[in-house]
Image (spheres, rainbow, N blue to C red):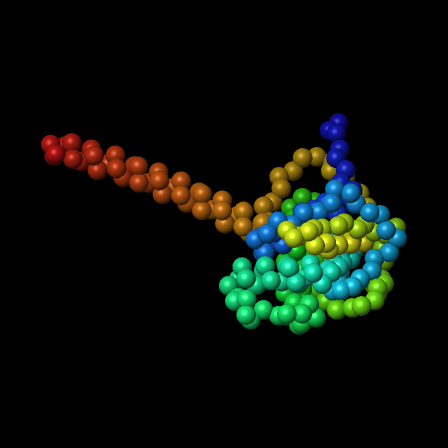
Length: 226
């Protein structure tokens, strides 16, 4: 009998951490890192200065929360906007500005989108997300999930920016295990990798056609004595 493979809640958390690191690093063109130590928590909270949360359901249900300090929010905002070509003079000066909250909400949407694609590819299940909600707060706010969770588990991971500012990601989801009974071919769902593979294939095809055409042309020249 083939050996089974089990994917736990913490494996799913690791996939989410990878999406946070990837999306924010690419968007800001800076280095984003997360702690290898994960904290078990009993509840998820929105914390000052900016909190963002998004619900997902489908193959399993859960909640993702990201809590940004004012310095980390402003660093990510400025790096992202300048990478997009926005001049320094037009950037918001306060973390409470709508532009900062909108930008973080957009990035949160991209993070969870990348996460859901990875879940679909690795686990062959589908989860759906709602629109991220951003709040500028000065007090801790407890967030409960409007869903039936089977023995909910909560985790908290610390992230650092290039300038060593800290922000946190919290995940609450079903306590679950996915058991792989046999090997299967994973579907590629990352659009960036798909585009890159297509370009490489097209490049190889073009080179092959060019080489074949060169051989035909040389053969014709030989026949003509040129």
